[in-house]
Image (cartoon, rainbow, N blue to C red; front, side, top):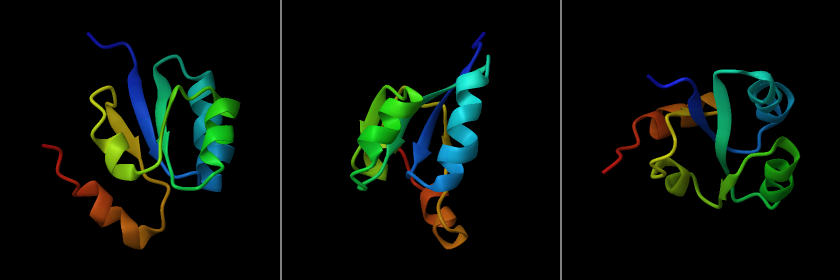
Length: 88
């Protein structure tokens, strides 16, 4: 049985930095496995929060077989597109 969830984060949004990523650090049953953004800040954010993988596109993160769940801290109007992303 899986003991923790490997999360991917789509973007470097402040809500992810202020709330989600610090929570993953403290969690016993979750970890931030990857973060994706075309923003040049992604490398520093990945390093700051100990996220081992980073991608320059959301598609690449969503295709990562090591991701169990995805957090989408994007504007609400963009959620539907990424929720409906079809993994081959």
